[in-house]
Length: 577
Image (cartoon, rainbow, N blue to C red; front, side):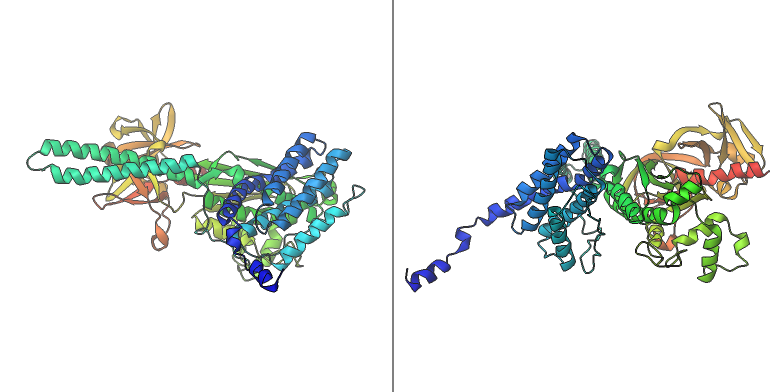
C-alpha cells in the first residue's frame, strides 16, 4: 500500500460509518431505563440486609445489575460504569453459585457501588468529565471487588467525597418526568383551550349583544362553563405532575441512617410511615435535605452507643421513626428517636457563650424556645470537631427550609427517653386553586375552604351560652365555640348579643375538632387562586393566603388548622381557670 493510499484511508469521514442519531437514541433509552433501576437499587440492597439468605432478593438484584451492565455497553463513555456493574454482578453471581450468606461487608460494598453508579450515570447524562476524587473512588471500588473475601471481608464503607466545584442544580433547573398519558392529556387540554379561544372570537364577531341579548347570554354562559371545566382539569393535571409518592422522595433515608450509624459504631432501627402520600416534588426535595441533618444529629447526639444504652437499661438497638402526613394541605413531618434527649443545661451554657441569650432572660424562657437554639447557625454542644459534627453546620438548614415555606418547628424531649421534632410545611408558593365559600365580616371578605365547611346557620337559630368570657353553641350534640375572628385572637367576646343574632355561623371542621366562625353574611361560592402574603405583609394568623376577585376586592383565605391551633388556647385558659 502506498503512502498516498494510507493517508486517504486515515481521512475517512467517521460520520459515514457511525450513525450518531442511533447512538443518541441508544443513550436516551439507557438513561430512561437506568434511572428506574438505580432509584430502586438502594431499597433492594437494604431488603437484602434484612434477609441475607433470601435467594429471591439476590436474583432480583442480580437481574437489575445485569440489565444495567448490558445497556450501558453501547453508551459512549460508559466503560467505567460497565466495569463497576460487571464486578457487582460477578460478586452476586459468586454468592449464588457458592451459596454464601450476604455479609455486612457485602452490603457496605453494594451500597457504595450503588452510589457510585448513580454518580457515573449522572456524569454520562450531563456529558461531563469525572472529578479526580470521583474517578479515584470508582477505580478503588472496582479493585476491591477483585480481592473481596467472605472470610471477614476487609472492605470498609467509604464516605461520599465532597461535591467541591460540582454543579448542583437549583429547584428551577430540576425537571419532572412525564408519562405519555400525562403528555397526551396536556395536549388534549391545550387543544380544547384553542377551540374555546376560537369560539370566543367568533362569538364576539357574529353575535350582536344589543340585537340578540338572549343568544349572547346563552353563548357567554356556555363559554364560561367550558372554560371553568378546562381550567379545573388543567389545574388537576399540573398538581398531579408536580407530585410523587413520598416513597420515591425519601427512599435514600434508610441508607443514610445505616451509613451514619455504621460510622459512629451504633445500631439503629429506622421506621418510616406515610410513604404512600403524594407530595410536591420541590417540597419533598427540601424536606429530604432537612432530614439528612436531623438524622445525623439524632444518631450522633441523641442515640447512645450500645454500652450507654445497656447502662441505662435500654435495648442495644436504637429506634428512630419518620412519619409524614397531610392535614388540609399542610405537610406534617415527625422525626423521633429514643435517645438520651436534649441536654437543656448544656444548650443554655452554649447559648450564653455564643451571645444568643442573656442570663437574666433564661428563667423566663419556655423550654421549647431554649431547645430551638440548636437551629442557630454555628451552634453546637460538642467540644471537639469531628467528621460528623461539632461545626454547628446543618441544623440551621432545617430551620431555614421550614421558614422558606412559612412553616413551624416543634420540639418535645425528655431526658433519657428521646426527642421528637415536628415540622409543618404549609401550601406551596406556586399557584393553587381552592374551592371556597365567601363571607363578609366587617370591612373584610373571608373565604373558607369548602372541604372544611360542615354547616351554615343563622346565629338566631342557635342555642348560645357564654362561659368564662367565651361564647358557645350547640351543634349535633356538641358544644362548640362560636366566635368571630377578633374574638378568637383575643380569647374574649366583644360583639353584643344583638349583633351575633343578626350574624351567620360557619361550622368549620378539622381532624381534631370543630368550631363556629361568626360572620356578617354569606356571599357566594367560588374558586380562588391562592397567593402568599409576601414578605412585606408577612404571615397573618389563621390565614393561608389571599386572592383577588373580579371586583378587585382582596379576599383572605382561612386556614382551618391555624384557626384550630389558636382555639386550643381556649382549652388551656379553661384548665388554668
